[in-house]
Length: 77
Image (cartoon, rainbow, N blue to C red; front, side, top):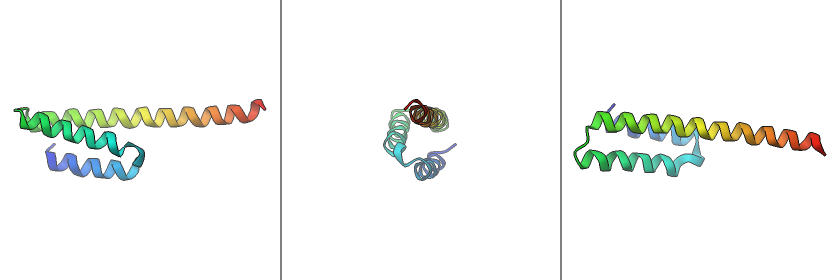
C-alpha cells in the first residue's frame, strides 16, 4: 500500500465512520511522520491500515454494546 492509497482508504472510512475522523487523521499523520524519519512507506501504511481496522472493530463493538445496554435498560423499567 502506498501513502496515496492509504489516504484514499482513510477518506472512505471517514465517510463511513464520521465519529472516527480525528483518530483516522492521527493515524495518517503518524504514518507520514514515520515515513519522513526513514520508515518504509509500504510498512508504515500497512501498520496504519491494521490500526484503522482495529479502531473500526472496537468502535463497532462499543456501538453494539451501547445498543444492547439500551435494549436491556428498556426491559428493566
